[in-house]
Length: 262
Image 1: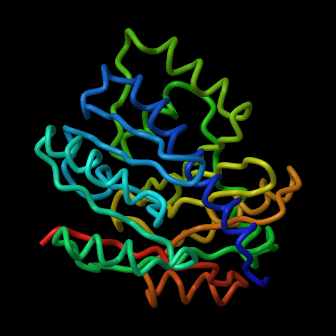
Image 2 (image 1 turned 60 degrees about the vertical axis):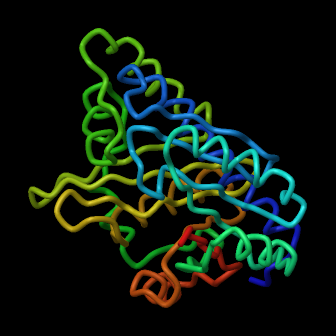
């Protein structure tokens, strides 16, 4: 698979759409205790803020490019009002020395790198393990999924809303999965839009997040079933997860650089 700007734009647009779905959906549950808010810069870039979760995962600007330089000042002021220093993320495919210089001038440094990998919905050797994976289809399963991901769990008064969420998942291109074998629950997500699928790293209650063979196989099978052209996911650069994904056929498409304030 040879990366192209068109393909990268499609991947970024799908990842942004998935992020917005998460924010819109889970921000409605539990009375929004995390204080979730966001600003969409364009189809491939979004700024996320969570007052109740100050870490960089929930407070970052994704997809920052050179043509967004004018947005940096108001975005930093927005985060400052919440008492948060965000992480800023740039894309290797849109390398811009002016943008890099502006971030350095503001006291940001390159603190980490993630690789975005993609493949056609390949057949995994672990397809047999996919049968042990359950797709979330009830309010109770949704609550278990949200608990693993650290999102607000709906209370009894929100059960109808939770049921509506699960009923509308497929219509929005979202599938949520749970693995309960061996006494170790794990959760994962597949999001599909316009022929591109997003595979979030599986979250394991005991082992943290990583590559789960059964969850990956099930999601790849479901992506194939709906005619997805490519699926994409992320890993820390040169990590064990990247090596595992590369061995089964995923290839690097671009690098996401993480910038942190000194």
